Image (cartoon, rainbow, N blue to C red; front, side, top):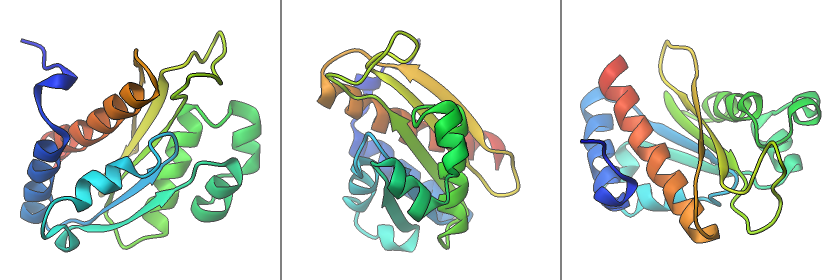
Length: 169
């Protein structure tokens, strides 16, 4: 059976992630745009997360992505903020500018406006950075209102971290 986003609460996924991070002795950083720090908030709802969560970057504007994470203006100009290259640059910047060995980045269009034919509302790019491995990426297209799109993005970001940590380390 395919797992649906509604099947597990965010807090439960974050608690499982924390257990795994502690087992592996790793720290996490987040780089968030459309989710506005929701991943970091979910993680910090878990008591004791200071043992495995280093920091979160909320980089909603392109200027913030450049200043805080080192995303090149050329990358933003060539691909737009909602793209695989920007998600990759965000996760690389989060890892380089933190004490974390693991990072997740999210950039997307939560709506209700801002979409286009090639990047409709609900388009979200993810990047996961893990120790000693290439950056992993994924793109999803979520339905629903702004809150629903963002909630689904947080779920995928956390679940992706867990899956990649289980499979790769």
